[in-house]
Structures are given as C-alpha cells and as structure tokens.
Length: 455
Image 1: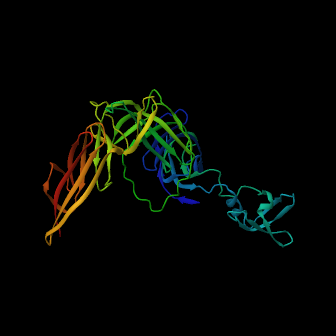
Image 2: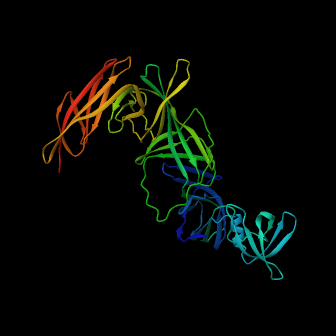
Image 3: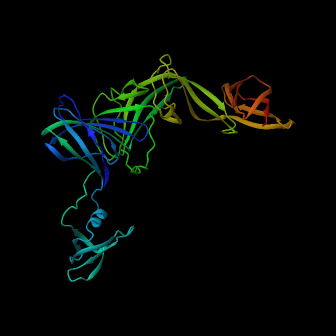
C-alpha cells in the first residue's frame, strides 16, 4: 500500500448541492482533471472515511476536498490503496495461514500455505503443511477450487482513498472532490472533402477522446482543453497505460462543443451530459461542417525526396474563407468524390494548434505526373575557406494543366547565392525558395551557384 501523508484544511462553502455531479476535463497529454460532488457521512472527532470508485490512474497528491456546508473538518491523513483482489494477491496474503483446496477429482487438500508459485505461463503449484506436519506440493492445474476463510486485510476490490479526518460536526454533507488522473487523452480529427474543381473544401471536425483511467464517468459535464500546458517532471515513472478496445460512440449531432478562450488556451464544453466509459474511445462532433476556399500547391524539397514533388492543400483559417475558428491539433484526412459519388482518400496529415486568421498547409502526397531531379554539377575551392557549388534542378510537367512548382532548397552554414537562372528569395537562414511555372508537357531546368564560407 502506498501512503501519502497530507494535512489539508477543508474549505467550507455555504452552498446547496442537489445530488451527485461530475465534471471531466480532458487534455492532450495523458491527463484528465475530475471534479465530483458526492454526499458523504461524517462523524464527530477523529475518524476514517473511505472514498471509493476512483480511477486507478489517480494522482493522490492532487486531491482537493471541499465540504459544501457548515462545520469544521480537517483531513489529517490520506492513504491511497490500490492493492486489488487477485489470485496472486490472495495466495501471498495467506502465506503461513490455513487454506483448503479441492481437486478436480473432489479430493480435499488442507493445510498451512508455505509457498505459492504462479508458474507463468503454465499453472504453478503450492506447498502445504498438513495437520500431521507432512509437506505436500500440489499442482494447481489439478485444482478446481480454492477456499480462503475471508478477504485478507489490505486487499480491496477497487482503488480507494482513505481519509483520516477530524470533525466538529456529524451527519451527511455534500462534498466536492477534485483530482488529476492519467490515462485520458483527446485529439481533433478532421475530415475534408474537395469539390470537383479542387477550389473548395468541406471540413468537419471531431473530438476523439480515449479513457484508460480505470473509471467510468457517467452523465458527466465534458470539457476539452486545447493547448500545450507545462507539467513538472515526475520523480518516478507512472504505471503504464493499459490496452483497450475502441468503442466508437457518438455521431453527427445538432450541437457540438461550445468554444471559448480560457487563459492562454481554448476550452471546448459539451452543452449536454455525456458518459465516458473506461477503456472507451469516443468521437463527438467538434463543430458544424464548414466550407473554405483552398488552393493546391506543388513543392519540391530535394532534401526530403530527390525524385518526387509534394502536393499540398493550403487555406487561411479566416471568416473570409469560410472558417475563422481555433483549430485544435489533430489528424486531417482529405477526400475527393469520384464521378459516381464514391469518396477517394487523397492523403492525410497532422496540423498543430492553429488560431484563427493563420494559414493551414496540409501535405496530401506526391504528384504522379510531375517529376524532379537534382544534380550537383560543380564543386570547387577558390580558397581554403571558400567552397562553391553549382546545382541543377530539372522539373517536368506531364499533366494536361499548367502548374507552378515551389522549390525549397536547404543550404547550411554561411552562404550566398552567387548566380541563379531565375529569381529566388531567401525564405530563412537555411532555405532559398524558387518558383517555376510549367506548361503541359514542359520541362525546365534551373541552375544556381552557392558559395559557402567555411570555418
């Protein structure tokens, strides 16, 4: 049992709370914050209270308790018990105690348990001392039933917080309990459909939540925080997240999340109650489908792929283009309808948290009918600390339409472009950008000379 000793003064609030209530706030980084209202029974003096039905991923040090009523109650000590009932735990707790085992043939084995071997991956064995003092080794694959006199002290059926408190009042009081838990995540999932002219994008958004915290939150007020919060490093590693089976829930609904700015983040609140079950993945509509004006761009980055040209969809997240809403980080899938109406997946990409009025650029894939090739034609040393390189980039357009290809070439160290066959711009300290227009079935070659200053 892991013990956490705290002294916590209870905040007393003169409020009336009708029934139990629960709010769940989910973050993007394995974190959930839970706020529960429960009616608990208190006695006068120093007593012990069990707070059950908490998630197995709870951070006990984050617990805060507020009593919504009159009186003076102070938490003296908090213990978090998570040693749950199981076969191994039962055997280990009954070492040096009497147990009964019933064989598959009905034979009874009774005695003091001396040792237990789980025998993974096969069934193990136990060692018993019977009433005559003889030692028996019993193979567990021949045992049909094991009888323990009672549940051993310290074993519980679910994770539980135990509080030792001092109270000057008694009776049932409404309490608000808040805590953090691991095992909760959410991300945005976007589905975009291009029109036939590839000029407009119909975009819908989903909030995809996973709950592996070890607890089901029934009829909860659900909130999502979009943004990168800073968290202190853990002194010890947390227990690993458990595997889960995805249960797709939710669907297109009339009202999605209500969004607002909150501190330096964005907060999304579902205006209806929802249940987030343990080991569940749930999708709920994030916003009403929106339409945006987009453009298709072709980009050649030889350092990423020397033979292929990327194709991307670009749009501005503004009201003028049809959006203008904060877009949380997530995965975006892009489709286009064929002539028969069937949707064809074009590609997918991830977007970062994007505020309104900022540009969104989604890499879709590589252009099939546009080819590229880069060559290093010359490499000379005019002096010991100067190196010249001459590059050639050849682009070919085999499409039936004219295209424009952006070339983004990475350059390292201290450099200057000495010559170039076309205009260029310095995108940043390590990148130049050149734009090439290509008619159908046209090939163009770009040459430029770069001088590097060596240290």
